[in-house]
Length: 203
Image 1 (cartoon, rainbow, N blue to C red):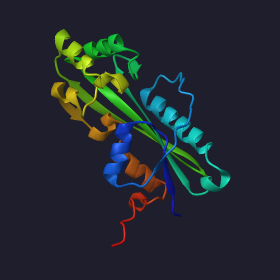
Image 2: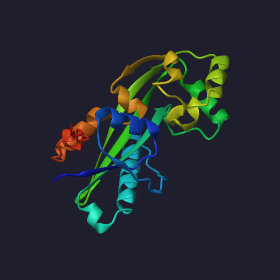
Image 3: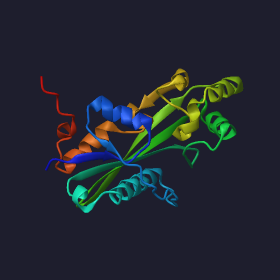
Image 4: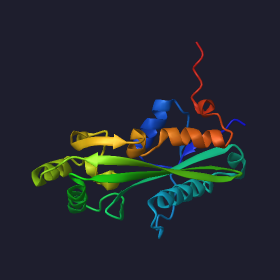
């Protein structure tokens, strides 16, 4: 089957990663319920990713659903037994960063792929070693605005890379889309990932 790929996420980072892969896709922005009582971070992100993908499927017509492949995703930071999403404000961002500095934490991303036959979800975990940050450095970083729409209040691919001592696992997972996990999940579903790439223009 030739699938039509949809991304159920407003994240510019995820769009950039799909563009990097050369995937052809359309955006669908569902209003999914993100209130979740799950305490295991891996199951938490997988569940939210599935909710987003399934809510996006509801936005399509019955005809469109026949060959739709909808990608939902969610990312959180897990530190000190707490699941952390995006900061509420600058003070919350500074609080998160202060709790990370000089320590190690985990980043979990969940993906879900919904088709007319159902939804398959998975999660990936990456360990991040965070370097020391002074209060002045935290305040200066928060003032850049970079942390405000990021899970855990930092972007590993941005200004905050100056304070990252190391990463164990998938780098793209920390950005918000575990590419290797996505590849494996597509293959397990019998979908050739390369078939989702944009067709070259003639001439």
